Length: 130
Image 1 (cartoon, rainbow, N blue to C red):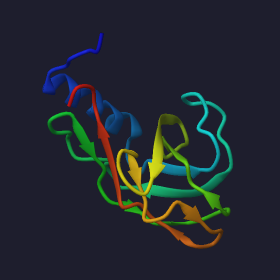
Image 2 (image 1 turned 45 degrees about the horizontal axis):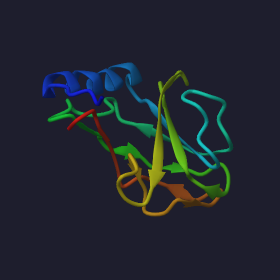
Image 3 (image 1 turned 90 degrees about the vertical axis):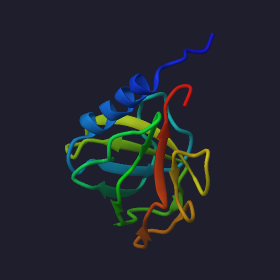
C-alpha cells in the first residue's frame, strides 16, 4: 500500500534534507551505475557548490534547489547520478541525473569533459503523494 502524507508532513521530510545538507553543500556528479544508497561512488566527474541554503522551504511536497554554482569537471564521462553531501563530505542523498524530468537533477547535457564548466538547469525533489 502506498503511503499518503499531508502536505505538511511531505514538506517537513523535504526540508530535513536542506537542514542536513547545511551551508554550501556539495553536489557531486558521477558516471556509471548508481550504488546502493550512500554506497561506494563510481568515478567523480565534477563537484558543484550549493548556496548558503540548499533550497527555500518546500511547498506542496516539492523542494526546489536554489542556484548552484557551476564547477570545473575533474574527469570526462557521462553523468548518470549525483550525490549531495555536506560541505565536509558527509553523505546526504543520491539523485538521478538527466536532461529532463523525471530526473531530480537536470543538466543541459550529461556529457562532461575534463576541464570544462559543469552546471545544472534545475534540482527538484517531489515527496510522497505530491
